[in-house]
Structure formats: C-alpha cells, structure tokens
Length: 432
Ligand SMILES: Cc1ncc(COP(=O)(O)O)c(C=O)c1O
Image (cartoon, rainbow, N blue to C red; front, side):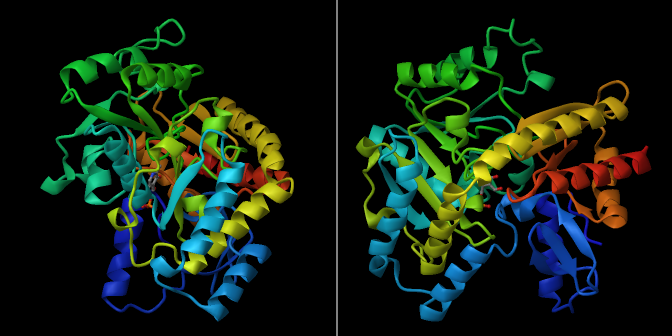
C-alpha cells in the first residue's frame, strides 16, 4: 500500500502514476465515508490524518456536499471579477466569527501558500518594509516564495529562487529539543528574547512581519509554551512588526476553536486560513486582517480560480457546520480525552518520548532509548498502522522526521478516538 509517511513522498508516487497513465491500484482508496477511506474491495481505513489535514468534516458531510453539488449544477466557475458579491458575503460570514479586531480580508485564494503570500504582501505594502521573520521548522507553503520563508532547507535544495534575501529565520519554541538548550520556564523565553538580535544583526533593518503557526504543524506538532505568543505579540508591537498567524493547519476548529490564536490568547494582525476551510477537502483559502491593513488592489493578488463559486460555497457551508452545532465543543472535550489516551500509550511504549497537542491536533515524538530521534521506527509505525491495522497516520520530513501526527477529522466521536488509539497501540506493539 502507499505509505502515508509525509507530504513529499505521497505527491511523488501519485504524480508518477498519473504520468504513466497507470490503472488504479487495488490498494488505492476510491471512496470516503465519514472519517473512513474505502478501497475498491470495500476495506475501510480509519483516517486519523484528515486527508492532508484538510477534511475536518469527514469525506461526505451532507450539508457541505449538498451545497457544493447544488452550486456545481448551477455554475462551477465565473471570473473572479464577477464573483465579488459572493466573495464579500463569505468573507463577512468569516469575519463575524473571527476575533473582533479582524475586520477586513481577502477571499481570492484557494491554497494556503498563496494566502500566506498575500498576507506578506499586505504586511509589506502596509508598512513599506521588506523583511519577513519566520521560525525554524515552520512550513508556510510550497510556492518558491513560501518555500523560501519556511524553516527547513530540504525543500529548497536545488531551487535558487527558493531563497529570499528578505527572509530571516529564528529558532522555534520547541521545548522538547530547545535550540538554546534551556529549560522552560527558567529559560526566560530566549526564543522570544533573542529575536531582537536576529532583527539587529541578521535582517536588513526593515522588518515588515513575523509569520508563525500557532502550533507548528509539519515541524512536528510543536505547541509553544504558555506565554510565548503573548511575549511575541509584545515584541512585535514594540518593534512595529506585524504578526501573521498562519492558521492553515490550526484554523477552522482543529484546536476546538475556530482560530487557534484565540485558543492560545494572542492577537495576530493578520490570519491566514486554508485546508479545513473547505470542510470536505474543497480547496479554498482566506486572509483576514485589521481594517487599517486593507491596502491591496484586486489586480495585486488574484488567480483564475480565485473567488471560485464551489470554493466559496464550501467555505460558507463549512463555517455554518462548524458554528451551528456542538462540533467545536466536542473537539475541546474529546481532544482532552485523546491527549490522555495518547499519554497512556506513552507510559506503555518507551519509544514515545513526547506527546503534545491540543484539540484534535496531536503529535507523538518517537525516540530511541537515549532520547535521540528514531526515524526508522517512526516510518515503520506509520507503515504498519496502515498495512496491518487499517489506520491512516501521517509523519513529517520536517524537524527530525520522527513525529507521528494524530489528527482525526473533527467529526470523530469519542468511540472513534478510542478505536484510533487502540489500533495505534497494536501498531506500536508490532514495531516493538
Ligand atoms: C501551516 C501551513 N501553511 C501553509 C501551507 C500551504 O498550504 P497549501 O498546500 O494549501 O498551499 C501548509 C500546507 O501543508 C501548512 O501546513
């Protein structure tokens, strides 16, 4: 079967099949139902990765599916210049649920990468400054620009345009393997304090913004320590640097709140959303910002499929599904249970060095007896979980490549979570 170990390898496998015109493999998934992926022969897998973290409502959520189908019958596309009304409507729906200081936005993206590009454009245009701070281990997309400002070199190798003179990366708040070899809380939060040195000595002296993921997703599900974002907010304010929260993974309910920045108690000037915004995997993205940052002209950031009516419809229906019932309250409540269940696994399997997360966004750091990253076991665990226990998990090539991500769709019930952890436990026993 396909090994769902990280984002890079999957893409390459899929691409070669398409390129060779290959027939559908019997091991491929042909259908999705709720939180399950199903093969041609009917074998069902529990998807504990929510697709590519972009299927929060499961594969066939009725309201979102019906809304998109209805829109599809009416019209799949109209030029973005003709869709301004629907885009404005969906944007206002999003803003109505956003933190009160975010009062404007941009609804012409369908990927997280270009939404982040837009956010940086907004920051640069509004401030007249150039540089972009971001974190080691961060992932902000795969266009050449967003690759350039992401915190890992492996995606940049061989692509000279993926390096930006305006990008300054600073150590991440990764307490488990602290860059400064310090210990929270006695560390004085060097990961914030030392940013001033990077601004002083590594930037051009003209820093427009700092881009952060509230929980570093591909970087290993790194949850910053309490107080980190408040200190960052303060530092950015003092230095006139706009704070951008890349909520492409953490937004739209993943943490049990529509916005993780709200859950973590900080105030970014700009927020980007994508992935979960499409509910059942429909591509759509949004950029929300403070009214004073509403500086972009439509010709400055627009695409053929920007304002696509299917995407806008999916976003609107997803937002409604997430805000009208008990979904987010369930994620908050069950997310605690998920964390406890994973914590119990860690007491039984010493290869789990750290369990961290919130809501339905958890990561297990797989280590050797001496605490060093165990990449082989991580990959084996993901493979065995799929092959023997029909459990879809994802890993990451970022960081040390030794984090298994457990991020079920938000519709997963407590029973589903228990089943996921039971299968994970059997896979852990198998890999020893
Ligand atoms: C935090 C974060 N930002 C941005 C992106 C890029 O989004 P997309 O793949 O839709 O361009 C991703 C994708 O994994 C992501 O995880």
